[in-house]
Image (tube, rainbow, N blue to C red; front, side):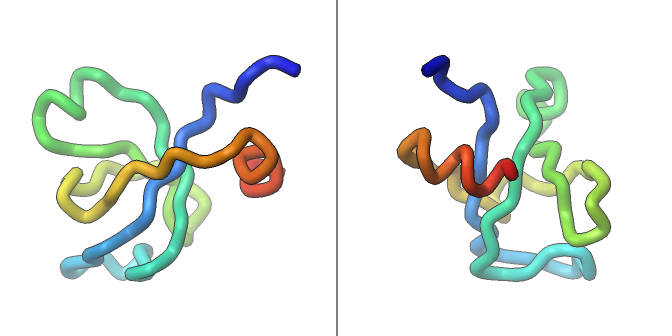
Length: 72
């Protein structure tokens, strides 16, 4: 079974972002340019991807089975 390229992060701070929920797991999308600027592209509660400060999140290392379940 191929490994997933999907990445998930845990929100540890929501700041003034209304579409983030502290303690919730979100899918993040790779974006090297914005990551170099301290921003992370995340699919938020609006189901759209937006840029948020990287310090709002912690990257999760999850088993493939969990990644598959979250991505479904």
